[in-house]
Image (cartoon, rainbow, N blue to C red):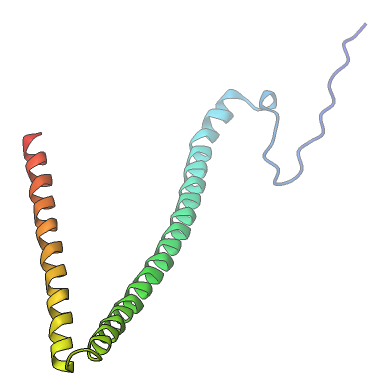
Length: 129
């Protein structure tokens, strides 16, 4: 009794999913470079699209943070003006402005000293390694 043969439908035009058994080894090897190049091109395109999307999100985020810092700067200036005006109710306006200036100067000096000490400590630790 003869063995039944598998009937396989011919591939549709443009369909490259041909059974590997139907193709010769030399043809498979000949197609390999083109397949690898196509795969690499597709992967690079996908990576490019992903990076473009990430950079766009980062750009939008950075713009929003910069906008918040800009508005925050002016909010701090309004707060300083409010502190001066509040002190002006108790002392003359010029004295209130000098008191607020002195307070801000002390805060700035303390922050600068703490930052300098932190940088010295960090640079000293890196020099030991």
